[in-house]
Length: 111
Image (cartoon, rainbow, N blue to C red; front, side, top):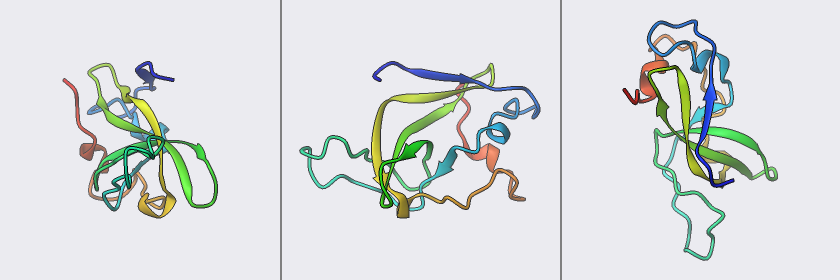
């Protein structure tokens, strides 16, 4: 679980090869989440506005995630090595890549 995960995406969008269009598991955080203490090492600290890859639901209140670092020049979504949990209420589950403000530009390019 501690290796860098790269997910190769099909090319549709000229800017980032459509990576976000085929990855509905990518969602932004609405609020900054800071674990209470180092004892809760399974909790992942994430800043408001950062994108995460949804890995699965731990329970009704917690989601297992990996932080999205960006999209590289090949259209590959690059994820942080560390996985953790964040409160479901902090994740914008209604966010969609089809909003008119071009949200694909919000994910950093690693070029």
